[in-house]
Structure formats: C-alpha cells, structure tokens
Length: 504
Image 1 (cartoon, rainbow, N blue to C red):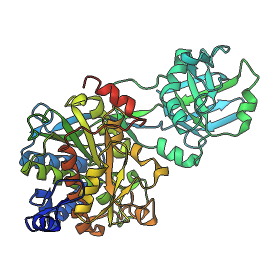
Image 2: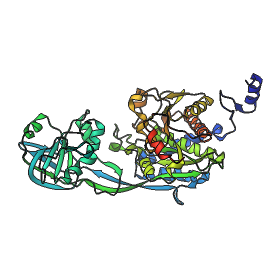
Image 3: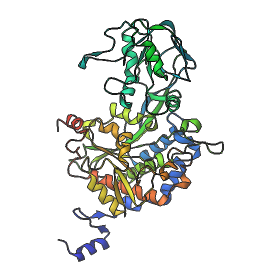
Image 4: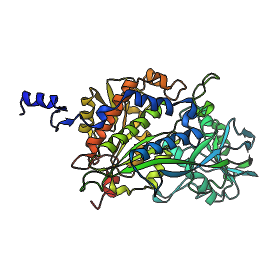
C-alpha cells in the first residue's frame, strides 16, 4: 500500500492517484480546456446563421466545412483518399399530391383517411381482394397469396407481418410488402392502419418530406400505403374470394436527389504495437432545421431549431478531444468522424458502417457523444454501461473532474439503439454513447429537446467544458488500454463482434 505521504507528493507534482489505476497526468491537454474557447464554438455551431444545420442544407454544409478545417489545423490526415469528406447520397421524397382508393361503396382520399407512401403514378379500375398480411416467408412456408389470384388487382392487408404486428413488423412491411405484392402481379397494396399512436401523427410524419439514403434502387414499383378504416372494410372483403370492384389513383411519389457528407480525419497512434488498431469517435453535426422541418412549436419571432444540446454539445466535445489528442497522442490510432443525418434515421453513421474508410475489423471501439440535453450537472450519462468493459475508464475520468457516472438512465427509452453508436454495434464493433447527465426524460429535457429554445444562451458553459474534459480523458484511457474492449458474454451484439474479429 502506498503511503499517504507518497500520495500527497504525487498530488503536489501534478498527479492524482485513483484506486486501482496509475496516476493521471494533469499536464494532459484536456486539463487546460478553456470555457470561453468552447463557448465560442457553441455560439457559432448553434447560431441562427446555420439555421438548424438540417441535413443537406447550407447550414449543415457550413458546419461540416468548419469541422474539416479544424481537423486539418490539428494535423489529422484526411480520411478519404486526400479528402476530409465522405459523400453520402440521399433521396428526398414526398408523398403524392393527389390520390384516392375506392373499395365497393367505400371511398378514401389521400391526405385524409388514406396515406400513399410509396410507388409511381398510377390509375386502375379493377378488383380489390383481401390478402391477410400480404406476406411470404419461405423459411416458415407462409404464403398469403397461395390461394388467391391478385394479378391485376388491388390488395388490402392487415398491418405488420405474421407474428409481429408491432412497430418493427410494420416497418418491415413498409420496406418489403409492395415488391412481394408486385411480384404476384398486384397493381397496388394498402394496409389497414393499426399503429398504437394517433393517425394524424403517423400521417404527418410519413406524409411530409422524408430524407433517406439513396441506394440506387427504383423504389416500390406499385402504389403502397395505409388506409384508416374500421371493421367495415374487412367485413366487406372477407369471404369474397373474387373481392369487390374498386379503383385507385395516385399522382406518384415525388423525389429529389440530395448530397450530404460525413467529415473525418485520422491520427496515428503513438504505440508501434497498437497503432494498427483504431478507435472511432463520433458525433452527429446535423439538427432538424427551421419551421415545420423541426417538428416542434415555433413562432414568427423564433423558428430556428438551433440544436445547442443536440448536438452542438457533442460536436464540440468531439473536436475538443481531437485537439487534445493531436497535442498528446494516445497509444491507438484515432478516427474522428462527424456524421450527418442522425436526426433523419442515423443516415451518416449507417452509410459509413456500410462503406467504411478504415476496415471495420481494425476498428476496435466506437465512442459516440450525443444527447438530448441535461438535467443533472453533477454527472455524465453512460448509455451502454456494463456491456464492453470500459466502465472503469469512464468512472475514473468522471471522478477526476468531480462528476459521477449515471449508468443507462431511462432504460425504457432504449437509448442505446437510438444514436449513431448502434450503426457500429450492429456490425460487431464494441460501442457506447456518452451523454450529458440526465435522470430520465424530465420536464427540463423536454423544455429544450427539439425546441426552438435550445439556444447557446441557455447552455451552462462551465458544464460544457467539464463534459468535454471527461469525454476526452475517458477516450484517452480507453485508447490506451492494453487490451481491446469486447462485448460481454450474452450481449445482443456479441455474435456480430465474434464474426467481425474472428481472425484475431
């Protein structure tokens, strides 16, 4: 046991000793972060000038260019063959301007009790038949089309897929049902709405502008959507093998190609034996834009969703860590990656995970920083605690700066799978989300989360500095470990990790 005198001498020499760990060097760059420097970045990235940094917007481009300029200044190597940018091709879609559906004596209008979500312009007067879930699964020998003829007809189905009528099953149906029906010769397909939240909310989200990854596919080849109706539609169709007379019209999905980008740089590690292993550090730099784009309340006086907490906070901490590592390199190599399109469905991180610029099998950990805000400045939150073996490093970093670790607040919200870390976890890379201190989804969070009130003037800049310091020191300690982080036995992503690193 070290004596109290020895510990005191270490303290006087600029070190703090923590139980079970070597002394932490307080001359590291993260101990010298300045509140005013970080506040200046906050007032720029979350300014009205950047207009909410919506993916594909000019404000988003400016934010990305700023991040690239910082990485260049810090001496990071470009991540993409001489460029700090990775282009992310997007497709902006809007539901048809007009559309209708008639089934027997029932009629439905697009934008009211009908929502056409996919497919080209079409007009057909033909039969309408009921096809249960409209699903085919060869693995289970399930075929809802086995005993009905749908060629040239419109089909009506139940929502979801057999065995899963919840959100995941319904969204799988959104992706796949139209082409299953088209392969059987159907000319249109509509599911009966059965989601557990209001029709108007569903219609407002999927009936408005949507942006997703452009994978080059043509999209659904027949009109597809949902119809909100009671039991009368099923009652009219069930038992009628030949169906009812009907009609369908759609002016077609409107689509526009967009381009955004991820921003990244690489810093070679200081340890010759570990520098071929990479830790990828991520934060999303987009937010939700202005006015109706933001999805929340706004006024003529303030219609800009500045996104100070979500996620200028995380972007600034990512840049702070990048700067500190450039001054004092960790043992492993570092990838700094600011990703686009998180607010639209983790688009940038999903794209990178599918098109990595450093092989995924060489990427040993993802340390993501993102959050909705904070309601407990005495701590930081660790989303994904007790899953990858790095909790001790985060605890030490927090304690050095006088904070506690709040492990997995609001577990009912499934926060781990709602930020960019999950794009890497799904590929098998051990990952977690580092977030400001929260006790749950409190009134304090909702006061600012995706609201026009989330402005730089409302940020506690001292807490921002402390957050950046803890994030940076924790990342350094993880990157300096003798052993790589791994998924704990039984974790839902363990199998993917074993497959990814199978040659190690």
